[in-house]
Amino acid sequence: MTTTSAENTRPTPVTVLGLGPMGRAIASAFLDARHPVTVWNRTPGRAGDLPGRGAAEAGSVHDAVLAGQVIIVCLLDYDAVRATLEHAPADWANRRLINLTSGEPAQARRMSQSAAARGIDYLDGAILTPTPAMGTPAAAVLLSGARDVYESVQGTMAAVGAAPLYLGDDPGRASAYEIALLDVFATSVSGIVHAFALASAEGIEPERFAAFATGIGGLLPELITRFAQQLQSGRFPGDRSTIASAASGIAHVISTAAGHGIDVGVLAAAKSITDQAIADGCGPDGLARLATVLHKTGRV
Ligand SMILES: NC(=O)c1ccc[n+]([C@@H]2O[C@H](COP(=O)([O-])OP(=O)(O)OC[C@H]3O[C@@H](n4cnc5c(N)ncnc54)[C@H](OP(=O)(O)O)[C@@H]3O)[C@@H](O)[C@H]2O)c1
Image (cartoon, rainbow, N blue to C red; front, side, top):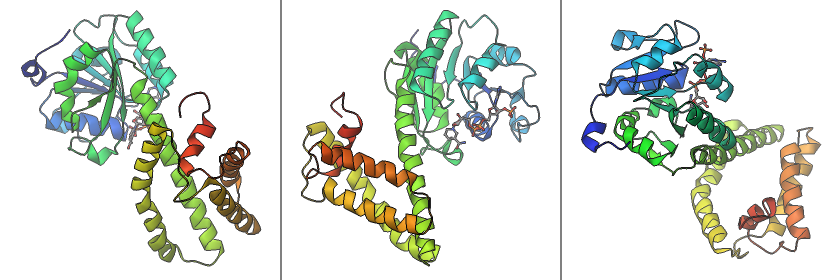
């Protein structure tokens, strides 16, 4: 079903299942946008100031779903979503389910299939921004799944901030972006804390080290853009730096960290990727080439 944009911007009864920090932030954004909001949480008493601002607290998942037309579920994981939706009513006519719980692309696709089997219009989503961004133009929400379902909730979902970005009819697509971006975050944080540990072992104070480390961070946007261009074109010039040179640098870090008794597991994994690339004859190539060493079957 496709609705017009005028219909989309009407107040829409919204239900939010899950009142962790993100569920509360989402419910708050819908209240700010003057949509009628019903909330439910497994553990009672976690609604904060939402009831005082006009949100209705449902006593059961069943009642919460019946109260809404757009049902947002935002829980710890997909097991929690499944357990929660077992208590939902059978009748989902005129209701759409939007799952903003983090998970894996395969989980999103399975959830979409089981929703379809229950006659539920379903979108899967990913939130890329922290709770303070919700309801502001800085919010970034990705959605994927059936286009007509997306079009029917597009206006309502604008309440979470900037217009949600629709990524097509594969329900796993939003999650695929989220998981790859989480990869960036997880490995970056791991590198940052390791570097602080190594600097500290060398007697460098954290704040003095941070002044230089933020400079490295500042190089990353240009590097990411350049890597993307090289991966698209399939050309990896080693004119700025080479994999062979990076491998040598990583070896120095490993040796120094190990000498201080600091775990080198993550760096050893990075070294083994560069070693594999060198064994494949890619030592003179630029560093973006490493993505093709990690994933040999596709273009990347
Ligand atoms: N917080 C952020 O900044 C942020 C940013 C982007 C994405 N996200 C994603 O948003 C989702 C929610 O995150 P969050 O920060 O709100 O908190 P969370 O700690 O990930 O999830 C807490 C919520 O999950 C519920 N829950 C856990 N197990 C459950 C179960 N078996 N059955 C029913 N409910 C269950 C909790 O209920 P109880 O209160 O009863 O325990 C609570 O409502 C996550 O997938 C997270 O990755 C969060």
